[in-house]
Image (cartoon, rainbow, N blue to C red; front, side, top):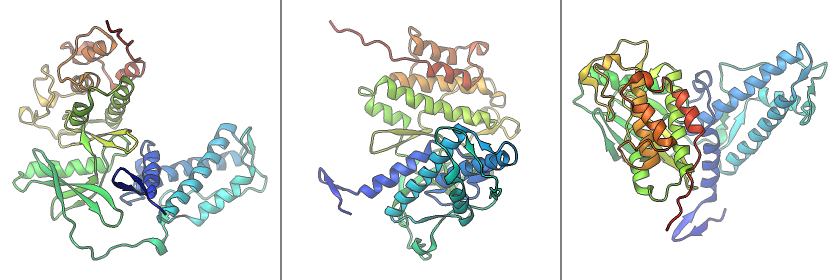
Length: 398
């Protein structure tokens, strides 16, 4: 396929195709039950999302076949759209030399469903329709063996340092099999036993999470005490600092909501991040200019039911609630305080809190007010407020 030129660089359309497919599924949540079935470093999330959606439809169809023998109109349209997505996206991957196979049993199930699914009404299920065997504990998507080139004896890949924190160094590298950049987070050699245990626990927590706005991790190396993770292009601090004059309200609101959705997901999973800062919020920046927020650095994460906590010595987060006397008492309202400061930076580009003269300022001050009873008590309340925000009127110039 012919590449096109843009400036002095050559652009490969296949790379755009693959990026678009990955980005399409990046923002769709999966679940642990399906994530655990796939370990592909690039396409695992897409496979898990599609597997989950297929199982939901097949289970519902089996239930309706045994009762009313009609599949709901909206679900029928969704099922047809899902079939089209699978066919289109797997074909796109094939054009880019990524050959993916769907299990024969599921190919057969789709072939059996397609003829009776209707776009405009309930779909009558045929009298002789045999129940679909729903596959829950095995993957149904896989790379076709004839097109997978696994490098069993790869040469060492050169790492480039991209950052360093209290517990670890972060490096980047390009995977020679996929041509995609990943990151490696490696524990520092002089960590105490307890801090190394916390580093390992960070990986375990992240491995069990699956959400578009939380950084994804892949594999832990016990010998080197490091793990591989998805690569992000920049921090929230650097992204806004470089674009503050050009960044519009709509873009700031999207970034704010992605950040809030990520924290809300953690709280729904009964976790407290406890180290929210402008450096720990990463962004993936796409060719189109779109961005994807990724929460990272879970070294101080705490299960709300856990007792694995120290007190003042652990209060290392960049944004700390002045009302919090002891870290063991850290709760959602203390996380809300840090969230308020992050929102202030997103909407204003400044690290100080704005004056509460408009809706943005009012929301931020309700996050950071010293009377914790007057703060938002849950991130979901805050999300509802931010979703309602409208761009301020343009000020007329003299």
